[in-house]
Image 1 (tube, rainbow, N blue to C red):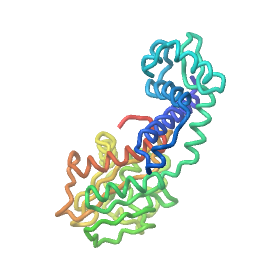
Image 2: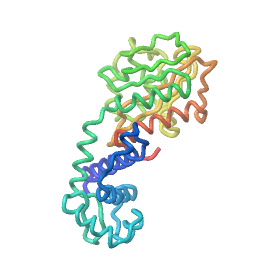
Image 3: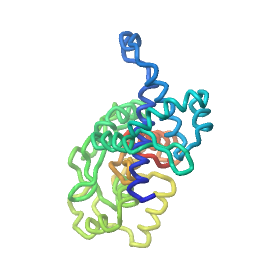
Image 4: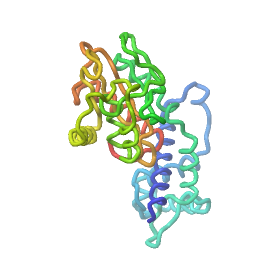
Length: 288
């Protein structure tokens, strides 16, 4: 299967999973709870959810079992779903998501705004850990803060929307450098970082830097412990898009006396979990 086809299938599958999670959430009001839907659509949706969860074509018997219905019943729904392109059959007679499912998935992904999807998750993260969290994207001059959710604990540092973060000296920068294509990172590394928070005057050697980035990729986060700002700790984690690229980076930051920087500590776990949740919301189908 061509790469673009596989990517589109993953996007569609991820979108169907997101829709299933949304459907499982409690309704916002009693009125919503009282709404009556069309049962046949809900039953057909179970087949789509089962295919999505499997991530591979399924024979009728397996698909019906996964959707918790008799094969004879499932077959009728599959015929209708196939007619509108939501499902297709391969040469072995197994069922998979069809071309219209791919179109729906891509349309949904194109309408997603990673920052909008992240906002609620990040506010919950701030409430949970009690520290500020910054959201950064890759800008013209490198990692750039575009949102900052404050916490009750005051931060006496010059961190604000628009701040450009050092690629080598900050946790945010190291996360971008760890996962972005090297050619994109190199141009910023070669440029002057004099205006960046945590300037690169004490930048590590290339070999040492590559070792740092390998460790970041291995544990899934980057940490800044008392540097570049004395008395300030930070933990950053990547948010991935449907294609597996870095869409943005979440960075929790706080005073060293109250901020546990351990890679397996509660703050690190909370930041990673929040980043993965946002990744799922914008179509990422990879592992944690």
